[in-house]
Length: 462
Image (cartoon, rainbow, N blue to C red):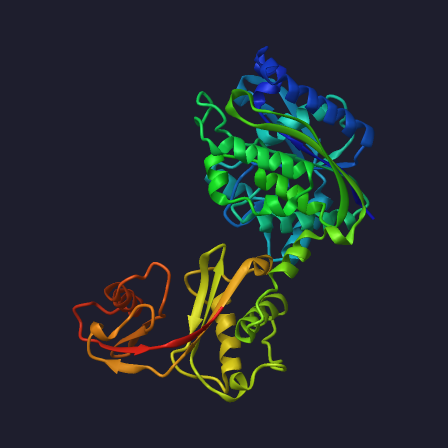
């Protein structure tokens, strides 16, 4: 059984490589000394494989690049030091295992074909985010294979779950692994820095450093996207993948150094890894905290989509549901949000199933997998989804917009076979004119055409 011996956070400014800095690297002497300390500790730990995540490898929206070249190499020619070249044997067996475990959770991960790489100018060479930590490590220890992993634009929690897949792959191996997460912190610490100054940049760095010191993973996963943008950070997702790989283990974190020269935050840290610790299952704990809705309509929608996405099964267990869900029929709409943004919404204007429960089950599955505006929900997204269920009352015809109220009534517009519906009390829908206009657009009906309108009320479950 393989194990992660320890993990490290390294910054990656090329300037701290002496052949590039040519003396200027002394402006980050605390960082250099901490990198040397971390490298020496790795030498003592003698890993057979180093798994390295970096924020400068090829980045895709929902595909995580894992370098599958047989030999992983690169140099600092971009920074005027072409002669500084590093090369490592890729642990392809580990790469394949990570891809397989990730696939089970719905993550798309792997390499890039040569044809696609040429078309988009993507090479398999090691980026500077990988090369800078490896420069310091390889000066004292080089008897290891390497795994080179990128990030994506998925959420922090999803990167954490991907890291859990890496942890599974390591346990399924016979490797002694050190995990290195490469990334800088805020880039807006000073007015003369690369991105100027932002008052929230020091706040971001302080929050992250303290959270690492205290092993406060929840606080890290809950860092606001706006704060990240204002700080112009680059390494958080890299760190989160590493933290995910340590899920379920006791850890001993130690920050070796933090400083912000050149307007950019650099942290060097080691996280020692101990025995399995069931209390430190971060995602499981977060999932349990989120199980706060006792509304049977919402709970049924959630269970229905989860059963379908994870097992391919249409839920048919209606035990324990209220009588009105089993003995009444009505149209329902299931709306799904992720981090406050719509992730899917599908429904039926009138009843199409034997009861409300069945209506909710099928509409929940459709909202999560068949809304044409979105890709189908993947298993790793399920924990972050929020549901609401609208049960529609019988619609009634109206003659003008004066009979509408955007908070109280939804609207149905019809012209021939074209029908558009908009639910009531929606965020950013503030006027009746706006409500009707959106419904017409959804139906493909021109405002100049002749159309009829109906209004309806809903019982909303959240």
